[in-house]
Image 1 (cartoon, one colour):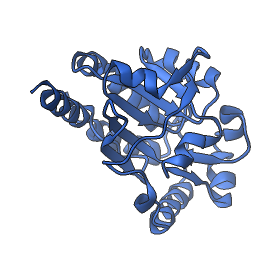
Image 2 (tube, rainbow, N blue to C red; image 1 turned 45 degrees about the vertical axis):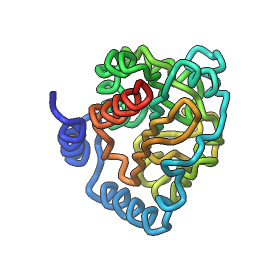
Image 3 (cartoon, rainbow, N blue to C red; image 1 turned 60 degrees about the horizontal axis):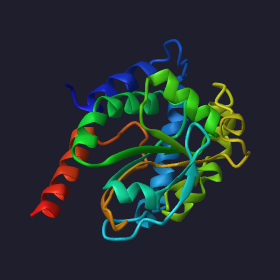
Length: 227
């Protein structure tokens, strides 16, 4: 199986070439890249939660509207937590599909896999159905949890008007608010005492850690605890 980032690079070539259904123009690609550069220069990556820190407790609704608490998840074992942008993001859909293929391995290693987005529950239910996802997709409305761990950011006005709205990505519809905030694409491995063991956070939403890298972290954890 190819590394996730090879799949993502192939997708990026299609998206940025402007072919259907993406329809990105060269100018829009330039705006996205310039925003990513500016966001990185703010030092946002230096303010995100790091390994060794405690992940904040939360209670968020899943795609069916049922509340999910971190404490209950940790009672079953470690948690692999994946933050994504939304159903409108082709890179997110691809990542979630690849994570689904690794779900049995994560569960076999004793870990729970959950994904979190700022979307309302009905949108998370839709993305789960479209991609055949059998793990919980949680709604972090208003990016409240993302803010606590330092991965939330505002889109620029130029990016909103010339890229997102132009392409029909009306985040006010998907997320149920008009904040135009998103989480950095992130994946965390959290131990049963809520300690962050592994943190993969990137400003570049076209890059995501391969699930096999995350699975190796989980397996190393379970080996340590079984000794």
